[in-house]
Image (cartoon, rainbow, N blue to C red):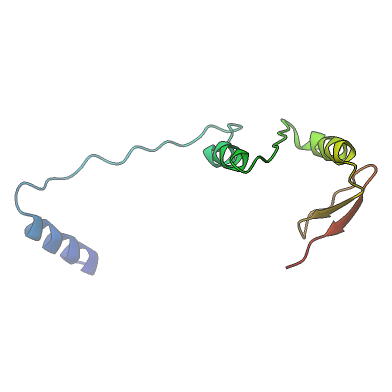
Length: 98
């Protein structure tokens, strides 16, 4: 008997005869291309801070969406995450740092 099996046998013995095997937990995997629930949750939560969320369906639309957001705010400078390379028309893009 392995250490794992021994430990599980001890747990089963401690729980008594009424504790039988439980149904496996449901697996709710998202389909390819589906929006992750965490994205929806993020959008919902930042709305509590009166943030505006702009979502794009295609990553190729991101630069245009960022340029439009900068133009609407009159922003000419934007910070980006390290390791990402954006070129945004009408704005100077600089990497953020810790």
